[in-house]
Length: 186
Image (cartoon, rainbow, N blue to C red; front, side):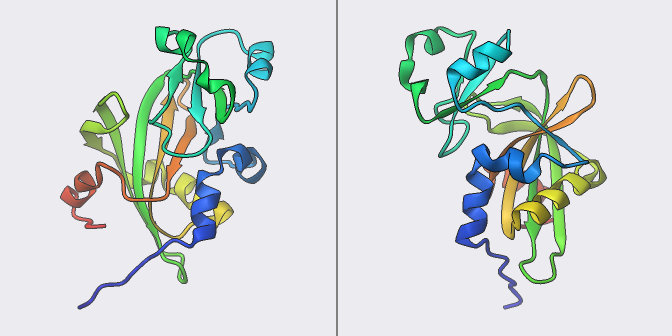
């Protein structure tokens, strides 16, 4: 039927989800930066003054995310374990649907600027971007984490024009239909 399956291995999925090991594996990236990440709330508050985000270590980053400047954060102490903590960084969210062939390492990347997002992080109004903006960054992710198959990653384009990695979703994105509209049917 002319279908070529580009599947991710279990190990690749674990590497993509292991935010706590990104610094070790991706800290030397030249195409993007990482957001400082703390596994302990006390370590964060010793080094960071300002708003921050608490994210679950496992699972989707949009589920259970807590922002320090909200009532939900102040009243919900569930973040005491199973969370990582990051400074809140302002900027534009760029999400990228990508596919990396498991053998040839051929890479396809379709980035989009999310102009309007739902509360749980799904882009509803987007602007498709030139793949050149993030291609090197996605290629580095695939190389360093040995990622294969179809996945999605999110970056923040900071006000200082820095690209910072937010998340890697080892699955189709909720907005994959936007990529299909550009002509690439993942």
